Image 1 (cartoon, each protein chain N blue to C red):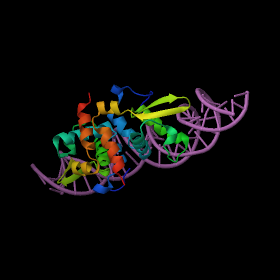
Image 2 (image 1 turned 60 degrees about the horizontal axis):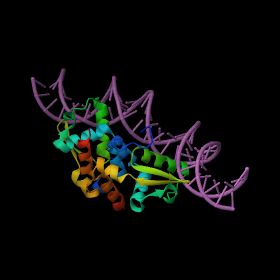
Image 3 (image 1 turned 120 degrees about the horizontal axis):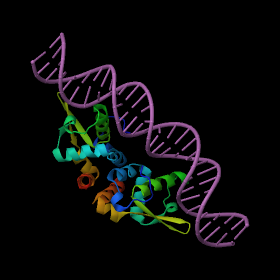
Image 4 (image 1 turned 180 degrees about the horizontal axis):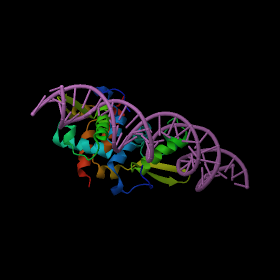
Amino acid sequence: MRAGKEPTRDQIELSEVMYALSDPVRLEIVAFLAQRGEQPCSTCCIDMPKSSLSHHYKVLRETGVISTRIEGTRHYNSLRADDLNTRFPGLLGSVVEAIHNRL
Amino acid sequence: MRAGKEPTRDQIELSEVMYALSDPVRLEIVAFLAQRGEQPCSTCCIDMPKSSLSHHYKVLRETGVISTRIEGTRHYNSLRADDLNTRFPGLLGSVVEAIHNRL
DNA sequence: ATTGATGTTCGAAAGTTGTCGAACGATTCA
DNA sequence: TGAATCGTTCGACAACTTTCGAACATCAAT
């Protein structure tokens, strides 16, 4: 997996983004952020230990799918929609649509 | 990973497709098939042992990304574009475009 | 029949991933 | 200061992936 923190736009790799989106929990997070916009980790109520959830946020962050802004004790996450659309036009949109269309 | 052979259209899962597309070798194969259409394994000249390549084709097949038609000694592979577009509109197109746009 | 061409399958080795509890760090509030 | 909140990090473990050589299966052509 990617090493550093948040990659720059140019550093975002297709294969890594695909990998980040290959886990149901992470897809859930992406769908949540797509629908609600910037949100702290805690508002996405997935029944899972904090450490597991933090792991998934980390993967999304380090692959360039989300960005995290720290404010006080809260970590606000948001999709890097602009960066992703610039790099891979249409990809994020079709993924989000696919998540919402699933049964 | 998925168990059986080729999944039916309804059985294709977003997370599994994303996983299949999270490997550079497999992205290469997908780009190749998108450009050239149905092709036997051997025409996609990726420098790798047969067994490794076969593994990647297997992943693509079992996740529903490609379909394999056997004719004589050749195994012709093609993208399941219709099935993927029905299930996840726009996804395959944006992925293929992204692969071609990469440096 | 033998050989050659295409791919698959098997088994092993090395690396990666997801999950979880426990410990930690930073911030806020009483 | 003390306690609560919000998340991260660490270490461990089981499960899964990637890679590869070797063996195998199937078909075609000699």
